[in-house]
Image 1 (cartoon, one colour):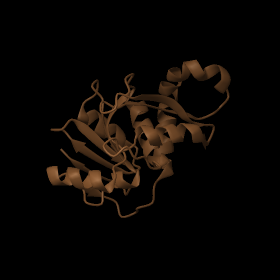
Image 2 (cartoon, rainbow, N blue to C red):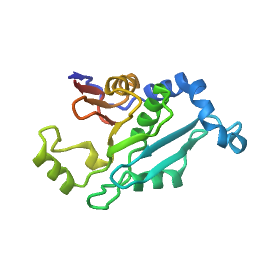
Image 3 (spheres, rainbow, N blue to C red):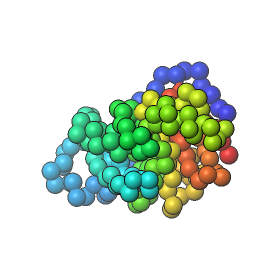
Amino acid sequence: MTSKTDSQFTRRGILGAFAATALVAAPTYSKAAGFLRGGGDIRRIRMYSGRTGENIDMIYWVDGEYVREALTEINYFMRDWRQDQATTIDPRTIDIMAASHSLLDANEPYMMLSGYRTPQTNALLRSRSRGVARNSLHMQGKAADLRLSSRSVGQIFSAAKSCNAGGVGRYSRSNFVHMDCGDIRNWGS
């Protein structure tokens, strides 16, 4: 496990990832280009949930501002499906997910395995697996577990780690990557 004692979220890491992928990501926004021309930085998140059958594909940041309505939809999409409860998802986690997706130059949406978890759901999952933290950042709306069928766990892990903006866990046997906006650290194999 690599650790960094500075727990401050590094905005520079996220912004650097977006700057590095701006030319690659730009063509994916072609449908919105007309009314957003000159809009500056545009961020997009695409996910689906096999648990609920729901999809989300939206621009959630335009010209330095989060789009409140988009964040509300993301909060609901990333809800604890077992308890049907939502919370406010930390936008920094969404930024890490979106930046990683852009770096991967993937056309498919993420498959979200877990977003927000209620304490009850987290306790249930802890009873079934040693890999679930007692004080998981999922319970604070600061983490997501994701996969892409077109990219390996190692590729997703490397992209998220390169953002240098939170925790990244590699779960190769379970075929997913954990991303969070907590302290900068990484783990797994």
